[in-house]
Each structure stands twice: as C-alpha cells, then as structure tokens.
Image 1 (tube, one colour):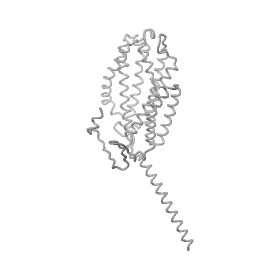
Image 2 (spheres, rainbow, N blue to C red):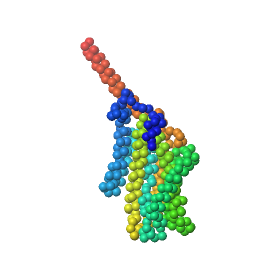
Image 3 (cartoon, rainbow, N blue to C red):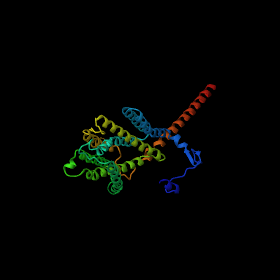
Image 4 (cartoon, rainbow, N blue to C red):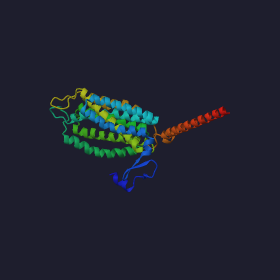
Length: 350
C-alpha cells in the first residue's frame, strides 16, 4: 500500500510546519495552506466543483431521464472548458480539450456486447452462448497477464516516442481491436473453422486489456506533466477527474445509443441486428475521427520532456505582479494627486 512508503519517508517531500506563512492548523497533524488557497482561490474552486460533478451526474441519471443526464453533462463540460480557458494558460487549455475529446470519443457499447456473448441459445441461436463463468473468469485471468505484458511492451517500444505518434498509434490499435468482436458477431470465425471460445480468448480477451494499458500509460503521463508547481495534486486530480467524468458521459451515450437503436438484449426474442453497425460507427470510426485530431492539440514533445514550461508561462506569478503593480500604481496616483492638491493650495495661499 502507499501508506508505508509515505510513513517511512521514501517519497521525497518537504514537511510543512505551522510556523510557515499562510499555514493554519486545523487539528493535530492536519495543516491547511490558507495562503496558497487565497492566492489561487479560483482554480481551487473550479477543481472542487469538478470533483462534485460525478456524484451529481450519478444522482441525476439514477432519478431522472437519460436525456436530462446528457444535457446536464454537456453543460458541465462546456462550463469547465470555459473556466479552464480563462484560468489556465492556453497550452494547458488545449491539452485539457484533447483529454475531453479523447475520453468522450470511446462511446461504450460494452454492455450490449456482454449480453450478446452470454445470451442463451433461445436468445441468440448459433451464437457464442458463453457461460458467465467463462466470460468473466477468462477475461479477468487473461487481462491480468496481458496488463503485465503491455507495460513491458510499452516501456521497450513506445516510451521513446513523442506524445502525438504514440497517442495516434494507441487510438488506431484500440479502434481496430473492435474488429475481433465484429468478426465473432458476423460469425466469420466459424466460417474459417475457429471456435468462438478460441477466437475470443486470442482476440477480444487479449486485445481489449492490451489496448487499455497502452492508452492509459501516455494519458497518465500527460495528466502528471501538465500540473503546475505548487498545485500538482490538485491539478492532477482535476485532469483525471474530468477524464473520468467524460468516461461516465461516454457510457451514458453508449446506453442511449443502445436504447435508441432498438436492440433487445434480454428475453427469448433478442434482437442484436444493429450491433455490428454500432461497433463499426462508435468503436472504430468515431474514436479515430475524433481522437486522432485531438492528439494534435497536445505539444509534440518527447514523453520525457515537459508539456508546459511553467517558468516561461509565469502563470500566477504574472497575475500577482500585475495586481501588485496596479496597487502600487494606484498608491502613486493618490500620492501624485495629494501632491498636486498641495501645490494648488500653496499657490492659492501665495
């Protein structure tokens, strides 16, 4: 667990004390950096609201209609995008927008695929008809092994790439991986003599987990590299939070697509005729058409380099200097006015 390395001091960090300027003691062993909060109050408020968006969306979709949840999601995403545009540097905003577009481009129809693979013979005659034990157990075991292999593959072959090529590569691979599901649904694997369980094991069970890891590694690096000094944890939580929120929205969109397509996934009269079309459109075409252009919003630097030069940006330092200059300017103006009044008084007295 991360508790032990933190406790014994393996993580290099500076211990804060209550004697420091701006630090306030809330309780024993708990300090609050009131000075930093007041200095950067607006970003902290936006980040806090972003953290509340996911539970609010969950509550709305639970007790309200799906359309209301999608409208609410769209409003929040637009609001956070506008706030990010005005609060953070422009380079940060473009990366933030890329994260939103990439996360929302993967419209999830996995629930329909799960129903198709585990449907009974009455529901899907001549279908895969996997048992829940096989479908869940095999995917979990194979996924654990593939996760380890994916990390090794990424470290040895993709870690030296620049951000844009590696993102485009993982997007294309992730989109093409859905062809495995399409082949099983169209029964083309049976036509060439490969059983469903074998093709699923060597195809979907492997590629799905492989693609997830290959995509998550560069994205996690991006989340960390755009965090400004002094606000690393808060901004990291903000970018990860908006990515997870957009993932929830993509799941909602997937539920809506499945519902509006007219598919029947349960019962004895199932109808999966629209599933191949949904795979082609939302699992293959949309991620590439949206995700690939979104990758060009990210600076094309090596993964070992900084995405944003915060020293050059002088983000909040510049604002602080502007405020201080404005305050000093106002004081100088007041002094000049006072001096001018004195001079006028003196000439009048003469």
